[in-house]
Structures are given as C-alpha cells and as structure tokens.
Length: 346
Image 1: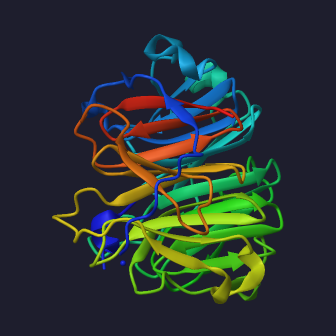
Image 2: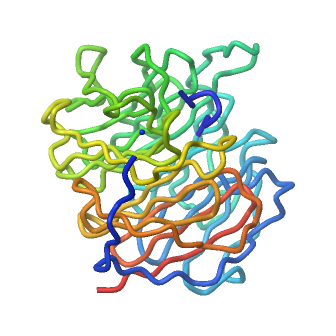
C-alpha cells in the first residue's frame, strides 16, 4: 500500500442504513511473524486464495467456516513478500511480489506444487537500492492481467498471456506514484495513486493510458476497486483527513465524472486510521477498511452516505488490509495474519 510514502480531504458521511453485511468472528490464519496476509482474491463464493509477506499462499473453499477451513500456508516464492493476487476464475490465479516477480497457477488448490516459479517482470530499482517491486495485480479475464509497481514514477505492466513467463509482459511508464489497479473488463483498467489513470486498451502502449485527475482537494488513493464498467471506487487520505473516497459511475467520463467525498473529519494522527482498502459487491454495496480495524459501508458510494466506523475485528495490531468481494461475501485479510468474512444480506 505504501501508505507512508504516498501520504501527502471533510464532512462526515450520513449513515447508510440500507447497507447490509454481517461480519463473522475474526480468525487468525497465521502468526504475524510470517509477514501478515497481504492480499486475497475470491473468484467465487467457494474459493478464496490469499498470499502473505513471507512467500506463502493459502486458500479456503468455505470462507464462512473459520480458520480450520483454510489450508496451511505453502511457500511458493522463497522469502519474498507477495503483495497482490488476482484470480479471474477458479482455474487461474496470478500473484506478484515486492521484488518484481510474477507467479501463476491453474490449480490454486494444489498448494506449492500448483504454482509456477517466480519470473521477474519488473527490475526498476527504488531509491533505497532495492527493487521497487509490484504492488498489485488485476486480471479481468484469463487472457489479460495488469500490474503496477512501487516506483516513484510508476509503471503499469500487462500481458495477454498470464502463464507466458517474463517475456509475455510489457511495461508502460506513467510517471506518477501508483498504489493499485482494477480492471472490470478486458476493455477497461484504472490505475490509481497520486492520480487515477485509465486505459480502454490495457495491453496497448503509453498512448492507451489517459490521466483522469486526482481527488478534489488533494490527497492520494491507496486502493481502488472497479467491480463493473459502471462503477469505480477509490479510497485514500490527505493531510486534512485520514479517510476520503473518490468514485465515479462513468470511469470513461474523464476527471469531471469523479466525485470526492470526505468521510472522516478528523486530522490524520500519525498515519493511524487511514483508508487503505476497498471492495465492492457489484454496484449494490461497497466496503472500506481503515488501519484502525474499522469498516465503513455504503450502497451509494458515488454520492456518499457511508456508515461507520464499525469495528470489524478486535484490534489485532494490523497495519494494512486487503479485501475481495463476490456477490455473496467479502473477505478481509490483514498484516497481522487475521481474516474476517462478511456475508452480504439482501
């Protein structure tokens, strides 16, 4: 998420009584010493696959049944931190790490044996001398994946052959810090960070990407989810507020189509309680997480109306969240190794 490097705003939203999601008890999947669970992808109600900060993958075929339903962590990437995963179907998952590698699996329930070897697709070096690394990946279909890196002047990488190895990926330099990417279809991808940038031809070159602005009033987007081509919701923070949303019902409509809402009116306090993850159930419900273990919910994310904060778990000392939603549930994982499942009602 790179919250500290991206930190650069506030009317409280009205409670959204129509939002309907029931959270199960939080469960620990692994000790925080394993680097915490960094990302999760649920291609169906019966499969969620997660990756952690120590190169492990784990999965469940029954997300509502607690910790015992999850597999034991299986090491697939040495000791690299796996930072993102996207599973467009139950037969393909693609993961990325902080060293610029990509891995894929057509049998994610086979554990380590089901995954390819890491292949480096991004060799950009950060200011500290290490790899800038990849921050997130989105695969809307089995024949398109896009990823963003952590370079200060960010890059988008894409492939039409996710299992094709390093040579199947190509990079486009966008020139702004990025934190995440979401592709609701093969004809639309939106990357976000200091600004949002979209493409209607994601596997094309630099000319296929277009800047569509930044949150009104400043700030950065730390996470974005576009569940359909008619909704994108980005969440983030600014120097004036730890929680803002920047959303549109017309992602192709340019900067004027995006609406910034300041959900929290308080001033940021030492980077505590920043909005850092968002997941949407189609166009009917969106869920935002903050770094203080709270959840905010809205059925009208473009127009505001966010309920919360509501605790989603009992202070597991996490510093980062990730979320993936299907039509029936949302699964949240965090950097303390804790998982929480929310069941959608209505």
